[in-house]
Image 1 (tube, one colour):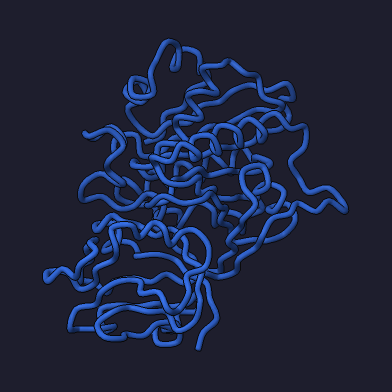
Image 2 (cartoon, one colour):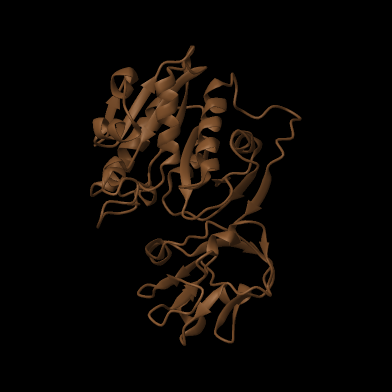
Length: 337
């Protein structure tokens, strides 16, 4: 089910973000008429219910009554998950699939049907571009993610941040519709509680919707750093993570309580990333975008601790043990052994 609203004032008037979501109640698309009614730009957010910066930015934008340069389409995904108490604490509804892994067929069973309805709407509207706003699972700087690193995607990214990950990995995320001629960039605004994340989302939306043009202009250097094909370090099914500055006997890997600090800059190979159980590296997997196992190329176990073989750059390091087990510990880029 995807609710469609053409009168945003009635949905937003006098509301807090929480009451706004209660009014929506279900996944919702909101149309705002622009100065140029022949073109549309789309913004998607809250595909994960515990990532609030995008919905705060959209709420602020709608509350201000700003008229965009072109028509705006706001898509708000996991409303019910966001409203599950405590507010913004659930990535998905308990027992349900991750909505941002459902944007590929078959579009079945609730979350898949919602993803299919969102895609159908996007393709019927044919927007100039789509921005998908997220928060990282841990504190860290903002960056973009796309399957395309051409200049149009660099131009879109530059409205929000100066770093772009370009990946060939396909997980069923909404950004993969770039393959269907809708330039799409996911913006990871930073951690859900980072003050800077809300600013990134708000300022970026304002620039994106007020610009007369958003496509790449000839001979413009957008000064965006490109990082290609990061690899996910994952726990194999049935194994667990913990976060502590001492090894935890019940966990197969223990990362530091301050693991989010790894999100900033390069991590030298002399710095331990965490403690391993007596199972060692066998609980981990790190397959590249081609499905080739690369764990031993990048990591080693020394005296019960996890080290990288060479300096690596980490992204999206989480300190949420459930996300670490169900999704990944982090993404990384580095030179293999």
